[in-house]
Image 1 (tube, rainbow, N blue to C red):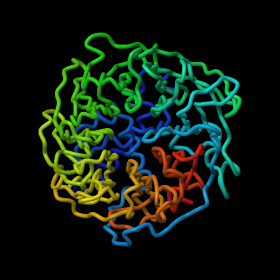
Image 2 (cartoon, helix red, strand yellow; image 1 turned 60 degrees about the vertical axis):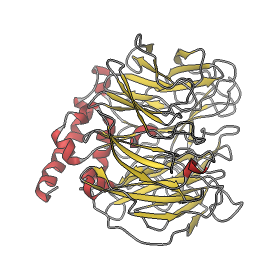
Image 3 (cartoon, helix red, strand yellow; image 1 turned 30 degrees about the horizontal axis):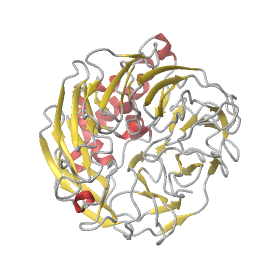
Image 4 (cartoon, rainbow, N blue to C red; image 1 turned 135 degrees about the horizontal axis):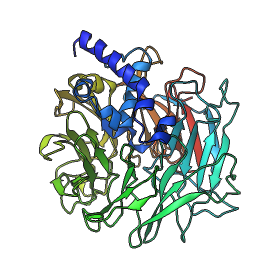
Length: 539
């Protein structure tokens, strides 16, 4: 993009971000206040600035775009980072955290995320109104263990805004059926007053919309929540397909382990109701599904399956198409990470642990499912060992201009299952293969990677592109703990901090310059602990 056009676009986008809360509410109530909910889906929608200039209405339909625009222009525009070179193993280990909170018996399920709400992203961080919520993989009991916990006073720690430690804002028992647990990622309304989530139990899947209240319950003395409940399925549970919220239409989509995709209307601004025929839609009978991702420009849902296929569903008609990505009958877990949709350029990216030859990162045209590029990312499950590949992340340059950008992710070694970092470049909007960079992260076949999460912070060192992911074990040697890993661009040295068993999904909150207010949130898979670390240095 030429400098002049980028400057014009920057001014246009800055105005767009400022206008968004007052212009694009769904009704009078929504227009009164729009904050910033952050959940698992933030990095499943990407775009290019040139594409957005041609389709400016998309920012009105998709708040995830507005969130990214706020990052890009809050600090006076994005800085294009030059590639760095550095050490290929894990050189820097931190042991001090901003805070950690004992969840007593629970943790966020592997591969799933907490959620964060910022009351006003244009104002200083709020100790009382900003909160993070953790849905726990345990059955709760009213008056006993909570399994749905919210914290405020998040920006706590040494020199922080909110004292030395966070506060329990609410703590609920949300179990309504025998052995009901929260094993999927929650989603928060744009005004922060409601939280939707799925309760999973053997043979049962229930969609809840909870209205939190401050001061209700403690972690060991939980309160009964105020919530509406909708049984999605009484024959299948749901353990891998977190709900996607279409904020513009107040619709949620969620899959169940039997391979069906459901549609729920009236999520936050009405009464949650199951959509009728043709919903639910059978995609891959008997196979687990990834979380669905909506291309709101084309009204196409993209869903991966453990059978190795990527499914496309027309959100209006229910028509289904499929593309083969992984090998049929593979011992791998097929497609287990959510697809990533480029909403302005009409492409979808998906990973699979075994296409019959190797683990792969594939780019397809969203509308036709035609394959545009396939990159090999190591042995994966092709060697006959069960394996899965976690979600990639795009760097900040991609948003400015895909031809200058990269997509980064964890694969495996070419002939083993040690975790490796891979980076792919682009020509135009098409991914180049093979990878332009790869390196072993740790020399351990016991360690696996979690999803990569990218966050551009315009207020760190003039603009820094952070990447965060986790390793499940052996971060500092055989038999040692898992960890959270942070980096900037491909090839840069890693910074790590120990987390027992590795982290759940990682939520990154904001770009505030206030002390302790630009952080990440997660829970440990090997212990019942919730953590907050700073973005810069994982302190």
